[in-house]
Amino acid sequence: MSSRPLLCPTCDTYVRRRALPRGMRAFCPRCRSRIYDAPYCDMGGLLALVITALLLYFPANLMPILEIDLVGNLRQTTVLHGAMVVMEQGFVLVGLAVLVAGVIAPLLLLLSILTQLTLLRIGKGRDLLRWLLLHHPTLDQLSMVEIYMISLFVSIFKLVDIADLTYGWGTLCYILLFVLTFYVQYEYNRELMWQHYDEIYGD
Ligand SMILES: [Zn+2]
Image (cartoon, rainbow, N blue to C red):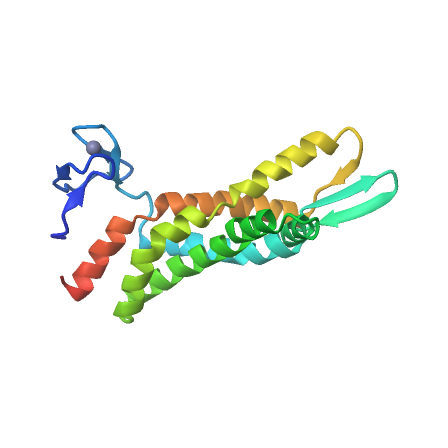
């Protein structure tokens, strides 16, 4: 069992870790914040989720998400194109933020988790694994696939009366990518990854 002290992320109360049945959560006895979960899926399940998300990532980002027919004027939009248009219109910072949060960070996050799981499995690359685990919260916070989902819904809602909208494989892949990334982030348990790290390398 890990000897790493477990502190409540909200109020820093020291909590002793106990084994939880699958799907249960532990809450802080003082402030009732969520402290840790027993994950629904094991490392193999998480690996399968990450690989599926990565397979969906490329069609979701490269294929048109929406085809808009506005009185004969046909336009296709991809995620990348959307960020470029925002930048071309002079909103460079907004475009960059969209690019980082919606395109780059989610890919890096998925690749990071894939690398962590692989390194834990083969028992090699201690320094890289440690670095990835330490920097995981930053990537996790930067990654916001949902910003595109929100803008997709807003544009559908605004355009549905004045234009013909066609959805394609890109739309399906993007929605699936959104669901899978969300699920990966939910299932990923950094505390558990540190435990596996400790089991291999000790403290
Ligand atoms: Zn607390």
